[in-house]
Image (cartoon, rainbow, N blue to C red; front, side, top):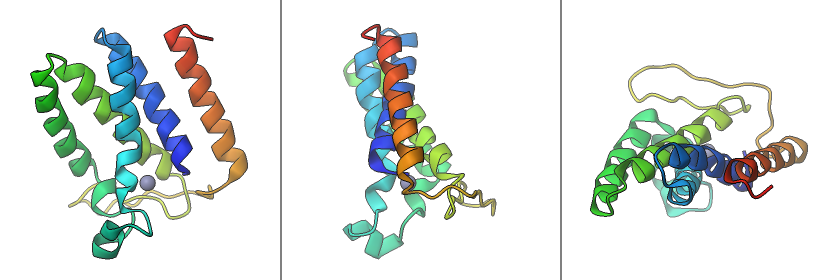
Length: 145
Ligand SMILES: [Zn+2]
């Protein structure tokens, strides 16, 4: 999926999670970061040349490790759930959105399950529709729409 789709999905999941624990805007920010972080291995980045695309950063284990780290960071600010859980939700939304694409994802390090589907990652229609939908839902949750 395109970055804006992952970003808005992370915003939505993070906002909902943050709202559930009393910090919707912190959750929104953490979810947004979580939503886009797995693509730090995107073609053109240094990490891509080292490990390839949709490898380590698109694993549930990576998401859990990063979420635990952010949970610990969140304890410093007395918001471990808003930061850690929202980040985890945003990152998992990334994996879920990449799963039905043609390249798909292999979400576990040690379990050879590969998920893929017919969706083109760069489809303008699908990405624009999802982006608008996720942004709209986020606005509704925050009460600004
Ligand atoms: Zn991705």
